[in-house]
Amino acid sequence: MAPKRVVIRDHSAEANLFARRSFIALIIITMMASALLFNLYHLQVTRYDDYQTRSNGNRIKVLPVAPNRGLIYDRNGVLLAENRPVFSLQLVPNEIKNLEQTVAELAQLLNISDSDVEDFYKDYRGQRRFKPVTLLNRLSKQSVAQFSAHQHRFPGVSIEARLTRYYPHGDTLTHVLGYVSKINQKDLKKLQEAGQEANYAATYDIGKLGIEKYHESLLHGQVGSQEVEVNNQGRIIRTLNFVPPVPGKDITVNIDVEMQKVAQQALAGNRGAVVVLDARDGGVLTLYSNPAYDPNLFVHGISRKNYSALLNSADKPLINRATQGQYPPASTVKPHLALLGLENKHIRLDTQIFDRGVFTLKNVTHKWRDWLSWGHGHVNVTDAIEQSCDTFFYDLAYRMGIDEISGYMAQFGFGEYSGLDLYEESSAILPSRGWKKARMGEPWYMGDTIVVGIGQGPWTATPVQLASSVTALVNHGTRYVPQVFRGIHQEGQTVVAEPKIREPIEVADMTNWHIVLDAMYGVNHREKGTGRNSFKNTSYLSAGKTGTAQLVSIAQGEKYDAEKLDERHRDNAMYVGFAPYDDPEIVVAVALENAGSGSAQAGPIARMIMDQYFGEGNATLAQNRNN
Image (cartoon, rainbow, N blue to C red; front, side, top):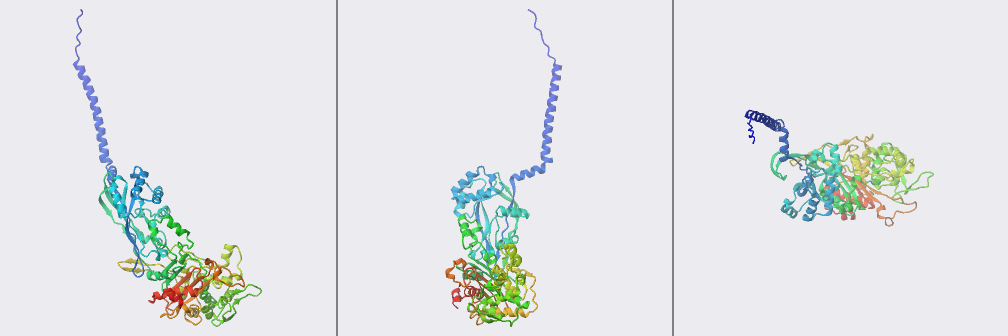
């Protein structure tokens, strides 16, 4: 056998190989450690601020805090709009795994209606997923307790306590105060366009109508914020920083709620409006439209059934008749027309006509009738206003012409917005040649002018316009802009705002003011005045003008018979007046739809309002009507 070969190990080579491998491993470990140290330095030093912010973002949230809405007081310090606490159930969609299942379980647990669920999904579709969406408003104490017992089952769902608007006087002040309601997509778009979206980050409601809408910027306030620490379930552990919101300003309005209640009582059962202005500065003491509705229905979201009933009612309660009702002014504008006739020398104080009950034009067969079929006999301008002689004003309108009439009446505010601090207002119609051509494509005829002479035809006015025009009369041309807002309410006191004044009405002969106002005094206090029965035995002297607005044409030779007409076609009753006569403090305008005679129906209501103002408010409407 051949001998075995013995392999002798090369320890030197093995040592070199090990050294090379160790060196390579060391290099790799060094590189990895360097990379780790570099990344650690990058994270802990270079990117410290960034990751610190992200870390805080996981445990720290900045939440907006809604400001308390300003309160509203009447001129005597009576609270008209306040804030009351309510509980609402809110869901944050991006914190909920299965939204539909969660909503269904909540609806079953708390007996939430299908309509509320539908409204939730409607709001959810228009909302960002990280913002809370309200599922149910005004939770009862029982519902709050039920949810609290099961809250662990509903991550992303919470009960929020907040203040919401409440109107203690209900429908008495609806059309003047308006109401607040949930911010919708249209509101949100307007806020975005105005750059105000951030200021409403925590606010649920916004002014929708009336003073609440017009003075939203004063009432809302400025949003605050709180920086809070939360746990991994999103629950707040503690508050780190708090920037308090700036509450909205409390405001005082010129409204006298007691007079407002008298107006509501007086209009019960009638469609119409009452407006009372302070003759000394244009402040709105009363602005009531009937029928009205409870604004509290809208604060938390009115039901479809209730809203449909309001929207489809034949009596149109959603319309503010005081500012949007367009009524033929009828004889209430005869003092204004008389002033124009005197000023432009178409008539003098001693100018007389003989009224035989009709007015006719040469070569025209149509006869314009006076309300008194046998006529008033010889009348001058004072008699014509006191007795409301139509024939005198037919003749006066014929002498003046439509151009003079429309141009002068515009100075009293007819055909334009009054400047009232409510958005819900109509300019109504002051007819002219241009208006008829543009509206109907027809020329103006003399017959059109004649009926305008008694406030009929296409001429319409709102009760606010009528009251404002009489304010200009009693102030000899000074035109105050009617204002609901009185001033900022601070520490129990009101900083009264300066009255707003428009361009005055110039009159060449100041005696003309006296002639017209004296005739209005005669309406209420002289033997043949059309308002004398309404103003018997008052401790104050007043002045006014009654009006009866015809709504449908009566054929020649026929007589007006209310019983034969549909109720909606019967005459409107109108009245304007002021008191005291010697030093006017208030101006009253009353409009009653389809109520009949202004002297019999509207005059007694004005009497009730004036009695309340002068401390004689115990007389009832029925007693006044029997006088």
